[in-house]
Length: 297
Image (cartoon, rainbow, N blue to C red):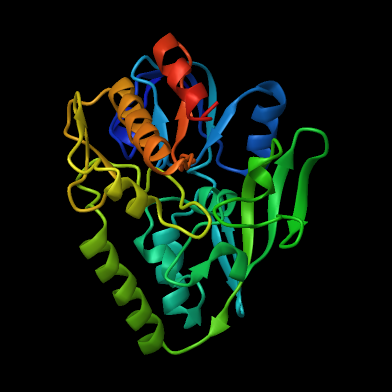
């Protein structure tokens, strides 16, 4: 399905974004391939949980995989489409008495994005349980990559280095009891409620990745960014690695605040933080300039 001049604002976690010229919503892998072969430069996204879309919109094509969301269990194996919500998959694993996806209960994203970035928390991550991923490669079409092929490391995979799009993931889980799985889920939810802002506060999760051997939150806190505000965007007072939209923020507000946070840590510690947020835009020259400084483009 194609929608033109699609207003993306309400769909993004930041509740920020203008109109996207062409927005596709394929319902199957076959339909995705058909669209991607026609729109070779299309940006691929899931449910926009960690993407900052420019307030000025985006002139190109976007393929949203949120409707490729089929989930199938076979013993301790589970196949999940890229658009399947991590939270839903985690709950279904609980119902099937399978452990390994408890960390997803607290994530707003979809399976494709979580595999793309090797999402993880509380001692669990995608790399621990993923057996293989079905991906789209412009040169070879749809192909299957093993766990080793995915080249997982902290918050990254081969999909960030190559023009690959995750379409489906196969996980191998561990049989356990509902009580044990539920306990771990409750701990994860409690941690999120105490340490991270509620999703009712528009935010994109962690703004920057943790540098090796350290914490982005600690560095940002020590650099004095808590409570810092630019336009309608501010750094959450309870954790320095979260940016909140007060309801009036523009994408430029977010980027200028990110750059200020980045610059303070660079000046104080000579550490260059890497953004965890992705950017979609290009019309606004000032935004593009900041994105280049932050290595977002």
